[in-house]
Image 1: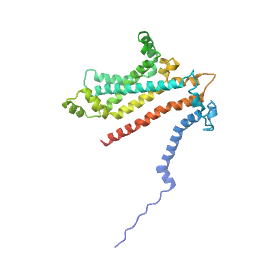
Image 2: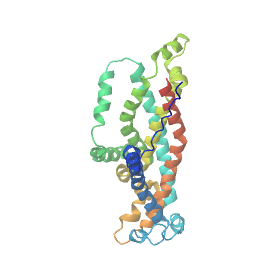
Image 3: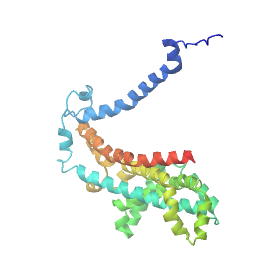
Image 4: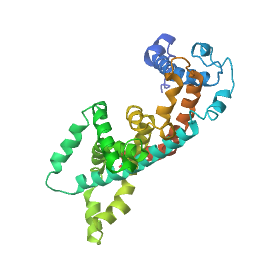
Length: 295
């Protein structure tokens, strides 16, 4: 009776390991450095009271929170008001965008009416035009509205929110429309047999099933509105009503005094709400994608 032979695997050489796997680690390290270095530089500049970018070349050579305190001690540049304005405008815009986009997507996905196909194509085509082309039209429109309804005209936060809602409705509706189509129509039909109408089906069944796309659209809308600069700088002229994106520009726009360290400190604090919202919604996004893959 012959004894079984044990085949021992040879340990791969360093060159073979590098060709198979090692190069991926180098690429990953390079990407991490490329992505993290600007963030570390801004954080280091915010902690440096020197006030110049060149003086912040030595990362974390000086650690001082003086810039963060000075942000709230400048009456001519009300950072606290900018922060609250940004949260208010971004939050309301995100909520309204999700709600209006979901209503439109549900109508396009579940109902059949005249002009449905043309409407979908129009939503797609409108998004191809750069938003910058509409700046002059938005300014003239709000200026004209100010003569009739000053509360929603130029230099009002409500007017800015309405502009954001009009610009974001198209792409978000099309994005939600694709996700709504993945929900089986048989669920709607079963609910109708039980006597439910469109409104009850939408609010009690459909919205729960499409929660992942609602979270994604809400997050993208909040990030987009809080970091938007061009339209906000044209619509809002009163410093007390401006957002962080517009207000922070004042720190570096003056030719005689550029407070880069204050700008960096304000930028770091402005990133906190976005990071908090992303971490809060991440579990919903991940859980939704996982559930979809299991199906």
